[in-house]
Image (tube, rainbow, N blue to C red):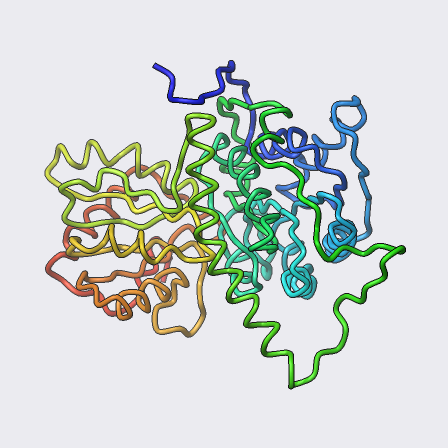
Length: 398
């Protein structure tokens, strides 16, 4: 039986990049700024196809760099247009200056990230170093683990970003190549339903020649701190708005994700925390591991910024151990997995008692096969009674 409010539709074969583009079309985005970078390029190519076919009435701006792509999206959103862009890797790094300007100006645009390793040496393959490099830029950040979730989360992202109590930009991140170019069945909801769920809201501080305003002017020591604290408050509001957006999405369309997912957690004595495609693989192997006696659950982080401390505390309160799998390196940090470092701070803040294990894996898309994920599950099980004070660099050749 279909869930209440579920939109019945036949699934379509789509890559995650195509699913993102379909969401942009259904949301009737007004302005798309585009610069190609592997493995993001097919997102904006598909949107350009929709525009050329008359399926989306939008302005496509072809720019000379990713720095310009985000600058153009910022300017469009500042006039009240619904704006979108997409990037990856060095492109996201080149945007770094503008990331802070967008969030500081409280401009509600959305950007998808097909996560990819940063140079040097040059790598066009997947890891999370690009996204983690931007984690403190003041953006709301989602990780998604299927093409369907990517489509759904772009819809949720605009609802959260444009909420007048939030007004912050949002990133929706997924694994480059592993997800961006993998085809899965995706159910879309269509423009009428998408706009009913996430209607365009007027930007209250927009640039308007008839009502001139100044944006991004100089702020001295007397006021700059207060502007930054307003971002702190907006990010705190974004957490509850994200919860509400997901609940309403499930009510309307029959699919919900929460801000954090705990898979096979009932009766679990240990947990593995993962994101994106690693979470999908762990879901596939955990039933077999339980049959072998390893009572280990998956803690999937979906909303990364703001971090869902309440859900994290609820899910980990009865766990004896937690393995946190990172696909980027926080060089020189006490735990060199950036997620593990944050989990360590929450563990202390909330007085949690599990043994924490920091694992770095898959850097530069180093191959991780089924047996490797089973090894991580066995590690979580062993960590119930054993502490690992150092970060484990899984799969590296020393």
